[in-house]
Image (cartoon, rainbow, N blue to C red; front, side, top):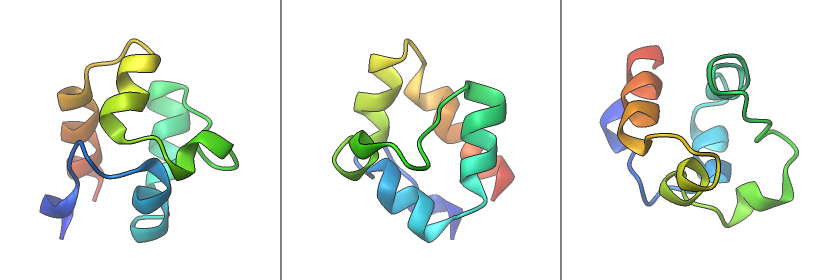
Length: 66
């Protein structure tokens, strides 16, 4: 299941498929994706880059949570 998380997934897709990911995004990465308009179109890769994060580390953390 968690193997389906990848760089091309949008934050909205992530949150819809894995609602519990919102807490990790907020607490570990300080990302307020829940309720953010950009989450609809922004991929994990784009969001990580925009916030100065390593997308591979972000995905690794998400997969361990799920």
